[in-house]
Image (cartoon, rainbow, N blue to C red):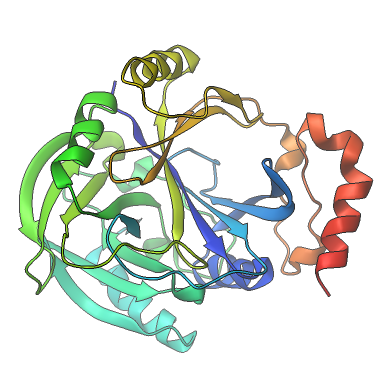
Length: 323
């Protein structure tokens, strides 16, 4: 089975600014305010569609002190989000401008219109319309925003990877994650070649764009950068099968990690991009679902069960770090 894009995780400098933009401007549902399970001093926000589905989630790790992300190769460069139509791009170009966000204007990439822009912290985002074969009724955008139904953001559409050794990344996407090549393109008005790959799943179509770039220096991951991309598999049996493949090939990896929301493992592919493989089905306590209110400081902090005994200490540390 193919492994669809499950979620994308981004480093941000301020979780309140992040909430303001992704919830109020982009109209995404805040699924959960929690903490990084590997760093309990770091707030972790999850945004999703109305049904909290894998394939719709953007997550953010708050980094209070750190350097800004530096452009370069060997980098998860941009995440693209689905919108219903080409007309939606015009709506979003105007909405972003009113919010003080400058877009690149509506362009064409690989035969599809696209609206690229830099979100707060200079995170690189893009919007693309559904393809002719995609059915809008299969998506469940968040209904609680002021965005007209015909223009709401639907799901994750694609990620763009910029790498030194294109074929090495493509090998992992095809052999380990079952993605397929479907064509080539130039990266806009540049000399860089792009391999277009897809998940061969018309009910939840997604792409990966692998940009070959041996000219630019290596990227320096920092605030605003995409920390990792997660690919979803059906269940733990599929996850264990891929774990065995990584072990047999001597890939350094995290091993199987229970995250309460899902089970996952992490590894770096040959260009050192951080990939996660996560199960699509997992346990999630209904109390994790965030109340949709404008003031994120009043939204309760969700903690997985194993951290609940430390709640008082965790909340104290978080409050001491922030005004």
